[in-house]
Length: 235
Image 1: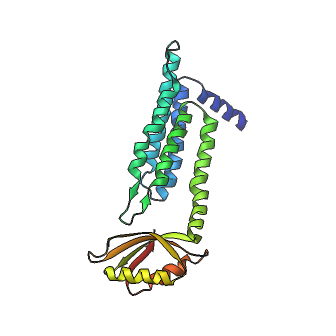
Image 2: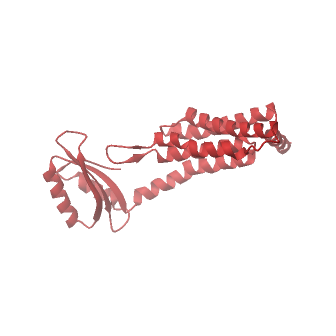
Image 3: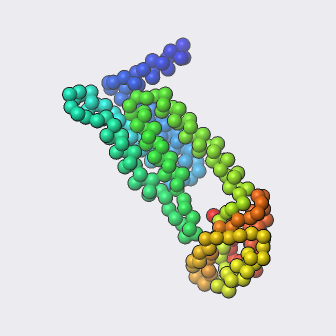
């Protein structure tokens, strides 16, 4: 009984008419809301409204493409043209969510990729491909929830990581570099900048590589305990 209901619902969504358009836009709204909720809970730049609007806009572009094709069958209209424009054009939203902090830390890449994926799912919803829309939603949620935890775990035990350190003057930087040469580690991409806590402080961002895993916490604690270091955190 339930399977028959969903079968009729999917068939109605894949058809053409006011009912089909309503169901497609409703589907796009639901998908955008679910993805946006996950981002909202993590306090990311793009939340529910942004994802819903992107998904509805992408769905509407496919609906308009099909409308032109249905209303003017003799024309040389390309149903994929508007969809291709959405895929490339939504990039400007993604660029707006990507920022580089004062610590040379890049933020917003996952949100930007999520917006782009949301637009592509919206295209599927707009053309009435319900099964593909729902499957894509499941995989996006798996990526955000499950793979995010795996990524966090790998990041936590990684042998290579980035540090942001503030020193009280340049002399502290020189002494710190000398200690790095004595410690069992290697470093690269060392960059100097002005500290955030005090205008007299000097900040350093660098990549550190340790010989084995599960030593990162001890290394960071050792750096934080140095008298020459006023602030240290992983980025």
